[in-house]
Length: 321
Image (cartoon, rainbow, N blue to C red; front, top):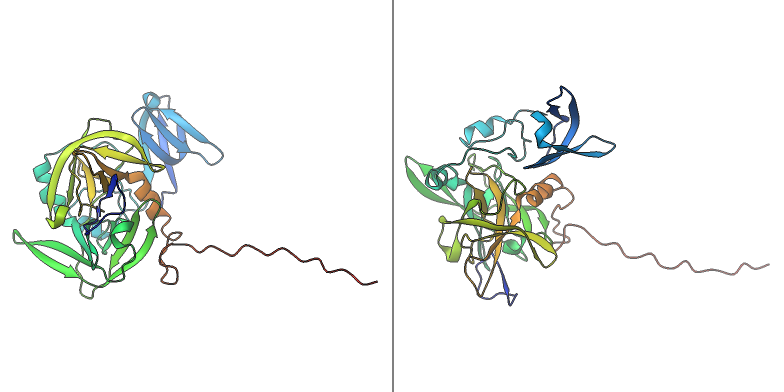
């Protein structure tokens, strides 16, 4: 939720891949299904085999193998758990992972969560790779041309605040309220980053936690549970959580207890508590996978694409005999 002096909505408050060449699902009867895994659900695996999409029951799956390029050295430098088969622009984990204590996770991944400041207010964000690419909400940077990112670097056990002012808008999707930014300051270091998880793999009642800057209080951690995975608001589906979401949380990550980002917090119900919402991680991955289609243009800053004028009706000219 973006922290500003006024809000537009009366009831809702905005909270400011290079894929593998093939995946192999090995079946228990020694057969195998080869294709692109579209989704991993608790009871099934959805695989695109080229000419059709197959839904494979989990009960018949022996193991899953992914074929992809190894991540760059930056992944190892981040000291964060990543899937070695993940694409290089961002890192993704869809398999269940062991849960950990929130306190330990915050120490490990908290450095990857940032503040995004504009003349109109502030929001939150998080790095998706070591090269300074980060996710936030579109409404955090909407209509703004001056953007800065505040990062807390951990040095010798101390957190040092560093402000980066050369920030480029790479891509925006105003309909899903997502924005991709890039820090382009000279001498910028390699940044700690987080892994994108799967909202589909969550179960209602699972514990989640958020890190952000509610009301400008940076690095605030709030914990709760997943209330529902399919809350429909204004034509979009959101994750609903009891983790407290307030103005300033917009664009920040919602984590599962494995430390993976399962959503991007962006709004809450004004007249209630424990009613926060987040954009599912699957939409974030789709946005990043198709970032070229959402590329930001200074010629058309409010939308990543341009509408063409409709063709005029062809005028019939009478032929003289």
